[in-house]
Length: 42
View 1: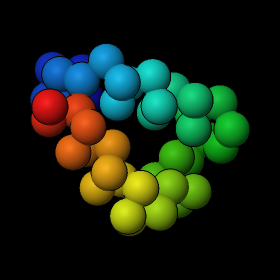
View 2 (view 1 turned 120 degrees about the horizontal axis):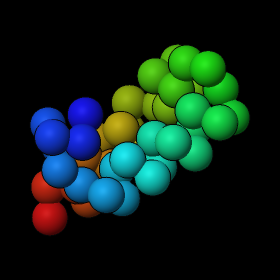
View 3 (view 1 turned 120 degrees about the vertical axis):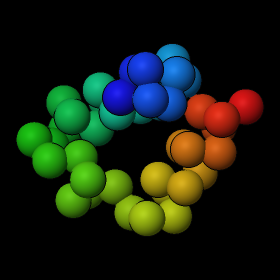
View 4 (view 1 turned 180 degrees about the vertical axis):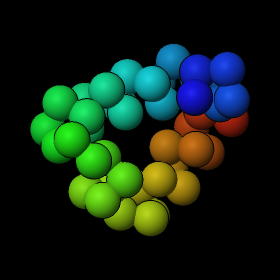
């Protein structure tokens, strides 16, 4: 995912959610995912 998005903030947030839950996709709401993607695109 690092090469795909290329956003260090996205990777850090993803790692934080991974520590909280084994499946971050299930715990992260769709709206939050969009927000993270927008920040990573900048």
